[in-house]
Length: 166
Image (cartoon, rainbow, N blue to C red):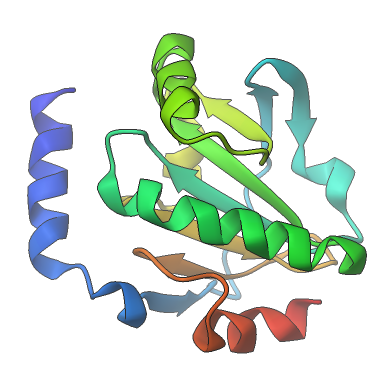
């Protein structure tokens, strides 16, 4: 981990809201939704354009991020509960090796599709500076809002935020 990453984590720890108070930010109307095409971890590449017509939750995470690990089970439950409504939940790993992802999956097996942002360019294009950050994309392919910080994706607050997208 680079010094810059450590400083970002330290700064985030002092300003991040508690898990129940994750910050929701509307996506700026003047800002287009970035394109996204990423390789899958041990799976096929994936493109956001392929998901048009479906709501998508992109969760930007890293295995060294404790809040990321803590919210992963609730993301899995969210994906399972809303699969019939078309919700697609994708875990976008930030700049980690295959070996690091495998170690994470050995301790916390998840079935969510994992995409690899190997150089961090996708995270930057979506304005991600704090982990975890999730970006929710409406059925029309336009980013609706982002959620910064850990959130219980099965809780009342998350249900209220996601319902309009379903």
